[in-house]
Length: 506
Image (cartoon, rainbow, N blue to C red):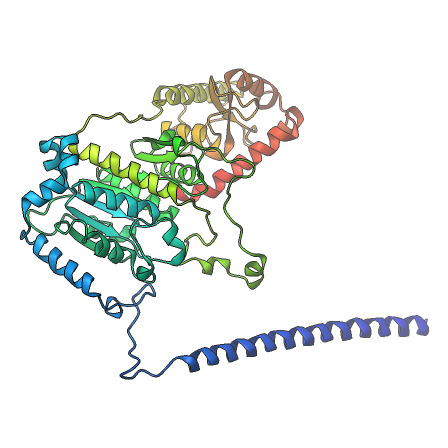
């Protein structure tokens, strides 16, 4: 016995020694890494010259960019600035402007061009899409434009930016746009806001034009690629009846013939559009916002969102790699032609809308009657099931589900198809499982009778499949796993998990 005890003690001592040795080694490695980082930081600091007459330091902006005074203008820049100052004060020959816009005038007619020249447009986001849109708008006649963007020109953005040059790298995109385009259309008046779009600043950012009559914005262009900011902007414009058009994702696209303009409810084959549409539906906005999107399908050999290198995950806190909190950190491959085309299509739409030029844009899906029918059928089913259980008078049973909820479930959660067969016609919503408390109405609040139901309880099927589901599961007492194969069960689980993730935005 004593020998066995000695062996156990020795074994535990070996394990303890190994653990302590591992901790010591790990500590040594971490310590060495920390020392190397400290040395590297000190080397970097020591390489920065002192602030003196030869080396003058400028304070950075709130977004980490150099202040405008850090870029001394060239002689040509100075000449352009002086010309623009005179032109924007009215000291510019009107005949020269008319000659420069003569082709646009011939197309639109002089009266429509006059409408365009007196218009006020706000572009939010002046990267690939926004820069091309802005350049086309001002070249075509828009004379009052406000640009909103926090970002700076980078080397990697030169493959798709409309006007930026190597000399603009490191400068705010809004400043770059004005600087380059004033050399083309010096009479255009600009407001350049080098800041992030924020919902709590929406009223200020979308305020009327300050000069003259205080003209309200004629159109807002959403060229943002951050989902939270995009949804906030579109929601604000929709709720305040401000005309807006939104550009969906141009990344990973390559077929110009697939670019379309339509209502947001009809946009497909685009992850950014899908996320935006679903978030908007969650707050009750199903249609009524025009968007530019691509119907090009992903496929083998086509570009995809690039993953972050494994070493970035090992370092932890990959969310800090974005330029700002909640901004995309992964790299989205972009063929320079596609953002340019998206921007041109957006600008074309805005010009036709402002001038009243005849054009057609696809409307929403107009499925309101179908949603009413689905909601009515669901209410009828709940009443029947409650009566079957003998839970008192179920007539007039209320559901905590609206027509908008029906549209959200059918279109966004279940993609307009049955989870069983994938068929897109004669659809219905039905409980996936029988409720543990039964189908009886909740009468906690006096005479009010309502069904205890949440969106995550419902699935989309065809009417025939729903009838069989009612018979086998809701009335027959079976579990879905006993009736459906693993493919259907797993699909429902995924769709319900998605809904739980989006529930925070409702």
